Image (cartoon, rainbow, N blue to C red; front, side, top):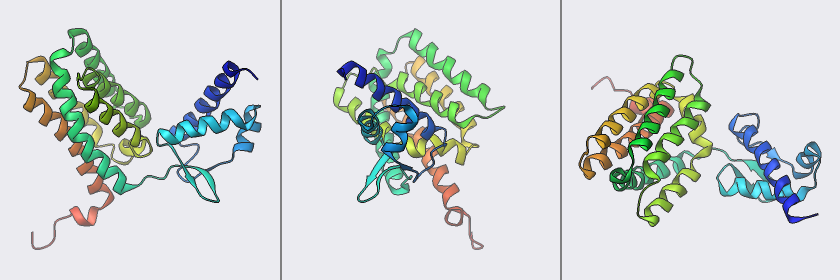
Amino acid sequence: MSQTLTASKSERAYQHLHDRIVHHEYTPGYRLVLGTIAEELGMSVVPVREAIRRLEAEGYVTFERNVGARVAVADETEYVFTMQTLSLVEGAAIAMAAPLLTAEELAHARRINNQMRQLLEHFDPHEFTRLNQRFHTILFERCPNPHVLDLVHRGWRRLPGVRDSTFTFIPERAGHSVDEHDALLALIEGGGEPLQIELAARNHRLRTLDQFLAARHPDLSAPTEDQ
């Protein structure tokens, strides 16, 4: 079998598995049996194994001893640490990228945010999440510091399992998120100070984290009778 053909089959297997994971057809903890998947796709286990390794690197799949590959289960502690780290490095990346963003790129980001706003009426959390990542990517991708940018990319790759379900879990956050995007764009377009931009981007992410934790632990966030 040629290397090109193997790569093509691996890509097909990747798309097959990726789509089913992000659309929750394969739920967290679902066991991915190589032989079964290969049979469904009409291919050998080699490209399926390559696809699963790629999904593992992206955080969608985990390997367990004596069990094999499973769809990753959201780890709240890992999510908290990743979001806290991303708030710092992505905020810095956007602040550094801001002077380099073109009018066309900012207009593109605004169009994406308008698409997100239109989704609020008939909310589709998966599409909203996809557009949200596109919006953020436009703002940080021009960061001139490759080390900071690498840390941002690593952080986003760690998030897929929870990120895709965040707006499903806290749909009320979506409207505030879109408003904060508008405010961040206005700050960048108005030539805001780097620290202002960095803090706006950082706080935007931390508000999502705070609301996620409040929803997961309502007893801890609810006021007591003495308050």
